[in-house]
Image 1 (cartoon, one colour):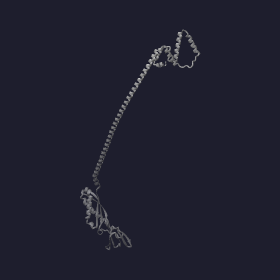
Image 2 (image 1 turned 30 degrees about the vertical axis):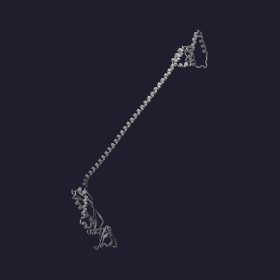
Image 3 (image 1 turned 60 degrees about the horizontal axis):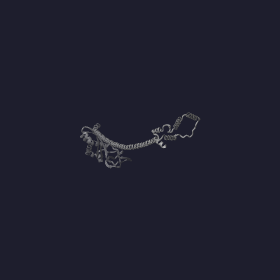
Image 4 (image 1 turned 180 degrees about the horizontal axis):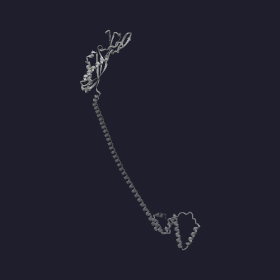
Length: 385
């Protein structure tokens, strides 16, 4: 829309570069071109503003296919006014000289013209195609047919209109039909998804089986190695036991041999000592047997003297002396009785002393035999004698 200002009964117009201005003064063309700026008198001026930029026209209409299915076509047509003079001559692009606003709606007339022309060619194409073909190939077919048809439309060049581009956005059936058409595709997609899921599961199961087999093989190998280890340990333990048993046997045999040798040596030593003691005892007995009684008495007295304890002091009380004198008075009879009493007193004294000469009045040969039978120190006594 052009900018118009008022100054003292005159008007000044300033247009945009994309607007073509035609100014007629008294029926004659005074200004013609885009982006003009000039002064004019409103009572004698006739102004027309024709846009020369590219404009987008959205087209939406219903059509019917060959199998009697309704579809909705969404398209867009890009056009421009290439001949402003022809467009201004065929359509009303006049503007108010006071406000610069179009007196009518020329762009709506162009939109109606382009929409009806594009719809006519699109309906002609879709009426020969079934719904499936229209949905699959209809976009390209409709676009080419609309572009060709608008380019061959005689009214558009006569009006100064040039079609720049045609785009078909979508061809859509009714919602129920669209859902019905989507079902097989969705089922196929779902089947493909299920197949992919099954394949993925099968691959996962196969991998799990391979992993389980590997784990089982590893366990079997470990068990085999453990078996070999146990067998090796058993063999080593058996060998160790055998070696230990052999060493113990050798040590036992050595100790037994040593013990036998020691026992033999001890037995031999004991036998030698016994034989020597027996020989000494026989010699001692032989010496005592061949000696006379006086000699044996002397030896007994000497042995008695050796074993009599030492008397440091002797105390005689009146009772002891009285008894001793009375005993002597009673024994003053025959000399033989006195001698026997003296001998018994001497034997008693010897027994009280605890020496080996106890019982000296007995037979010396018999006493020597008893000492030899009891295993006394006969040889030693002989040596001391």
